[in-house]
Each structure stands twice: as C-alpha cells, then as structure tokens.
Length: 248
Image (tube, rainbow, N blue to C red; front, side):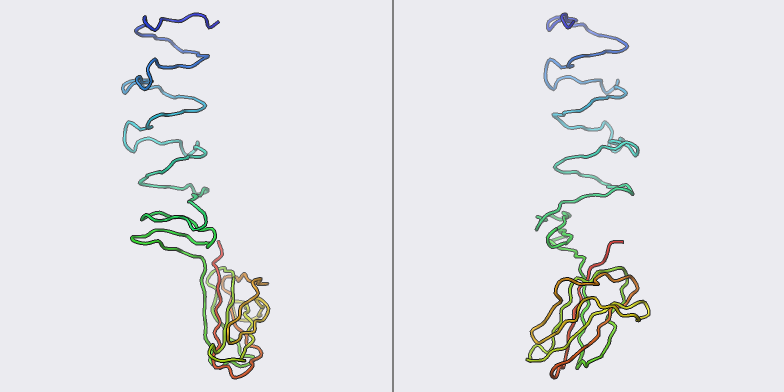
C-alpha cells in the first residue's frame, strides 16, 4: 500500500481520464499558485470539503449572478474585516448584530454602533457623530400649585416605562416645598395607581429614589400628577418625567 507512483516529477502523463478518483492523501500542485482545478470552459459540478483555506480572492466569474449559500442552507458565521454590499436582506426570523461597547468609535460617514453604557444608537451622519436614544421626557410647570390639585400630564401612545422623576419649586426661593405623586390612570383617566412613593419637591430640586414600584405604563393609559402638601408660598412647580419606549 502507498508504495508506487503513477509517473514521476520528470515524466508525467499528459491526460488522465477516469470515472472517479479515491484519494487517501493530499492533492498538491508541484508549484504553488500556478495551476487551476478545472478551467473556465470545464467546471467541476460540486466540491464537497470539510474546510477551505484560501490564499487569494474568492471571486465569481459573473458579477451579481451567484449566491453564497441558499435560502434553505446557510453559512453559520462569516468573519471578515469588512463587507461591501449593494443590498443587505435579513431573514424575517433573523437579526443583524452591529458593533457594541462603551463609547464606540464612530468617525466615518455611515458607521453605526451601540453604546451599551449610554444605551444609545450611535451613528456618523454627513459631518458629525450623532445618537438616537430610547429616552424621552415630558415636563410641565404649574403656577401656584395647591394641595389636592390633580392634572393629566400625557397619554401613553405606546407601552412605556417611566425611569426617572425630577421636580423643583421656586429655584430662587428657600424653605418652600410641594409633595407630588406621579400616577398611572386608565384610558378614561380614572383608577389612579402611584408610579412611586410621593416626592417632596423643594427649592434645590428632588428626584425619585431610583426604584420605581410601578414604572411600566400601558399603551393608552394616562400619566397624571397629584399635588399633596404645599409648604410656604410656592409660585411655580416644575416636574419632569423621563421614560423609555418598550419593545413591542
């Protein structure tokens, strides 16, 4: 077994026509990068291998005519330094992952990334780096609030989660305060449920404790503001509610 050659390095057969070849070793050219497997006129139908290591480009013979994989059989992962495409299509059950990290570098027009610390979609537009954030806010200023005042702030157009409540009274004053309770109400503005414990808004500002007991707001519900005890002569009260849109 494996003791004899067919031809030699000096004397080679011109053509070898066989129905099949069963090889138990490598098929290696005598000169690197010098010979083809098949030709432009005669192609192999299929090539079944466990792996391919290429030392040059993998280029189709005709532009935009052939697929890499198919709808039924896909490559698992493709690792590359860059991909240039005229059309990118994601299967309806799939997803695309873009670079993520803290303060990702986005410095060329068209580059995108996710800042996982700031929770922002970062992109470089025509001339500068910009961001899209899921955070939104509503802010209202009330003049001379009194105990038991109750106002609707806004109606939720989609499911959302309140993440922060900030408030302040008469920033130029001292010793004044107003207790506020931000609430969720149903679609008709009834049945209030507190979003968090009450907050005492004073002259240098106040905020929730960072752990909202009822932050999620249903689509179509109202977010309202209930005024409690007012201390001193409060001429204005400002409340800001920050929230994020929930994935649907």
